[in-house]
Amino acid sequence: MTDELRTHDGLTLRCWSWSRDPDGALPPVVLLHGFAAHARLNWEGPGVVEALVARGRRVYALDARGHGASDRPHDDTHYGESLMARDVRLLIDRIGSDEVHVAGYSMGAVVAVLAAAQDSRISRLVAGGIGAGAVEVGGLDTRVMPPELVSAALTAEDAADAPERTRAFRILADTAGGDRLALAAQIRAVHRDALPLDRITVPTLVLAGAGDPLATRPEVLASAIAGAELTVLPGDHLTAVRDPGFAEAIVSFLART
Image (cartoon, rainbow, N blue to C red; front, side):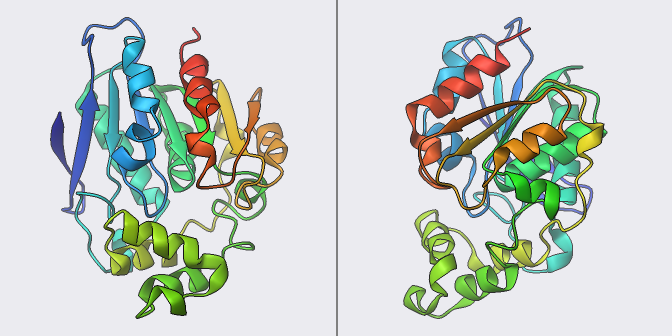
C-alpha cells in the first residue's frame, strides 16, 4: 500500500507499507533508505521487506525528502538528516504504535540514529552502511566522500565528467530515476555535527560490508553505542545489501524480544 505524509514544512512524502498479518504481535518495522536510492530499491529489491513480512511483521518505509516519489525541492533548507528524523517521528505518529523497530542504511542509518536518540517509541535499532565516520565526523564519512565532489558528480552535464571517486552515486541516481538537483541539495546539507550516540540505549545492530569505504572500522561505531552488536558481511557500500546475510541479519535481530 502507499500513502502520503505531510511534513511540518509543507512537503509531501511517499509512505509505503506491507503486511500479511496486520495484528502481528511484534512491533512494526520502519525502514529508512540510503542516499540517492528510494524505499523500494533499498529494501524491497534485496528481499528485506519480503523476509520481514513472511515472519509476520508490519513494515513501513518512507521515500525520504528529495528521493523516490516524495517531493524533491532544490533548496538546501529543506534537507539534512535532522529534518528527515523529524519526518520519521511523524511517520511513527501515523503508525500509532507505542513501540517500533527502525532499520536504516547509509543516510538512513544516520537518520535512524538521530530518531532513536530523540524518540522513546523506538525500541530496537539497526544502523547499516556506516562505520567510524559516524563517530569521528558525525555521519557520512566526508573524508572519503567529500560533499562538494558528490554535488559536482550529480550536477555534471555528463556522468563521464563526474569525479571518479563519486561517479557511483551519479550512476545510482540516474538508475533510480533521481532528481539530481534535489540530491545535490541534500548532500550539501549533510549532517556534520556529532551524533548523540551516548543517548542510544536500545538494542542496536551495526551492519557493514567488509569492503565498504563509507563504513570502515564499524567496530568503532559499535563500541560507541552501549551494548551494540556488529555484523560484517561481504560486499561494498552498494553490494552488501544484496548479500543473503543482509536481510537475514536484520530480520533475526529485530525478531528478538
